[in-house]
Image (cartoon, rainbow, N blue to C red; front, side):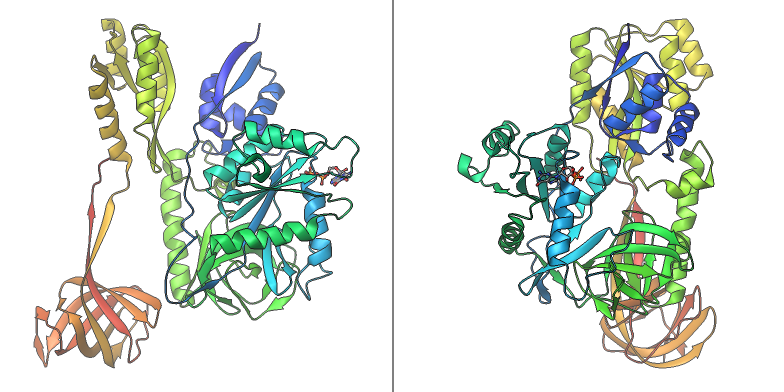
Length: 587
Ligand code: GDP
C-alpha cells in the first residue's frame, strides 16, 4: 500500500526531499530531467511535487495540507503625498486551465491594444497596455498551467486587480480556488469573469453558488464582488469588463509619484540573439528614461533603448507602464526589484555588492554548488529555523505544533522537519544532524545512548515540560536568524559651496552647515537634488585652516571625504553626515 505523506503547497525542494527521505540531489536531478532547474530552496507547487513523485516511481501518495490565509495589505494603494497622480491599474488574469485566460487576454489585446502598439507583438510578451477611452490599463500575461505556483503568486503580488476567469460550463475548479487564495493573500481586488457564456451548458448561477462556497460573494448574492458574464471567443462582454476594471481602480484611487527616479520589478528576462540580456519590467514609481542607469540585484544596465512590450521606442515611461530594457550586463532575475541610480559607477558598485552578498549566502545554503542553479534561483528572504519535535502524546504534539506557528513572522519561520510521539531516538538525531535542526522534546525523554550520539554529532537536544518555555526558546532561536537592525542617525547637513580637490579616493570641499552639526569621524551621503550620488566617510573637518571636531549650524567649513571611487562634487550638492549602527533584534 502507498505511504501517505502530507505536504504544503509551495514546499521547498529541500523539505520535500526530507519528507520523501530522498537525497536532495536525486530530487534536483529528477526536476532537471523534467526541465525544471531548481535549487534546494526553490519552492514547488503541489501539482509539480505530485508529478515529480510520480516520475520518481515512489510508492507514495501526496496529500496537500491546507495553509492558513494571511492577508498582506497592499501598501502601494491609497497613498498620500504632494506629487501623486493617478496611474493605470495593473491587472492579472488567473483561473483554471482551459477556462479561457489566454483567449480572454487575446480578445482584450486584439480589440484594444493601446494606440500605436498594434502589430509587433513579440514572442516574449509579459505585459501590455490597452486603452479604453482616454485611459490605460496594464495587463500582465500570466503564465499558463505549466507554470508554478510561485510564479503565479508573484504576478498576483504585482497586481492591483485580479480577474478570475471561470468557465460557465465547468464551474469552480482547483486552480480557481488557488487563484482566489493568491488574490486574497496579496490583498488585491477581485473581478470574476464568467466565461464561455456562449456555450450550451453555461450555468452562471452554479458558478456564483460555487464562488459563495469559497466565501466569494458576488453582488447579486449580497456580496461586493463583481462577476461579469463574458465570452472571450465571441468577444462579448469585453468592453464591460474593461469599464469595470476602471471603475474598481477609481474606487481604489491608484496613485503613484511620477517625479521621483524610477523603480519597479523585473517581470520577464531572456537572452535575445544580437541584443544580449533583455528584461521586461513594470514601473511602479517614477519615470524611466532612455539613458538611465538601472540596478537590479547583481546586475545593472544603461538603458540604450527604452521600448514598450510591443517594440515601440519610448523616450520616457511612467508608473504602471511595462517596458523592455536591453543593456543589462547579465540576466536579471524574475521578480527582482530594479531602480534608477545616478551613474554607472554607482550602478556597478551596487550590483557588485549584491553579487558578493549572494555568493556569501549561496556558499552556506546551496548544496548543489552549481553556478547555473544559483543564477536560476530566486532570492528567498524568509529565514527558516529547522526543528524536530517529539512529544509524549499526540495531543501535546499537536498543541506544540500549533503554538509554534504563532512564532512565525514575515522574515523568520519555524520549519518542522520531523515530528512524532515517544522518546527521542537515533533517527531524530540523524535527521537533525543532516538538516541542521534542533531537537525539542516535550514531556518526553532521551535515552543515554542516544544522548551520546547527539553529543558526538553536535546536535542540540532540548527537553521541556512547560509549553511556553519551549516556545520562548524557539522564539529566541528565531531571533538569532533576524537580520540585525541598521540604525542611521543624521547629525547634520552641509551645502557644498566650492570644491577644492578631487582624486580617485578623496574629495575636499567647502560649504555651509544648513542644519544640525557635522562631526568627525562619521559617514556621509551626497545628494544632488533628489538623487543620491555617493556614500563616503568624513575624514577631516576644518574651521578656517584649523582642524575641528564639530561644526555647528550656520558655520562655514572645509570637509574631507574618503570615497570608494572618484566623486565629482558640484556646488549645491548636499552632504548629510550620519552615523550607522547595527543592533541585534529580537522577536
Ligand atoms: P486557458 O488555459 O485558461 O488559457 O484557456 P484557453 O484560452 O487556452 O481556452 C481553452 C479552450 O476554451 C480553447 O479551446 C478556447 O478556444 C476555448 N474558449 C475560451 N474562451 C471561450 C469562450 O468564451 N467560449 C467558448 N465556446 N470557448 C472558449
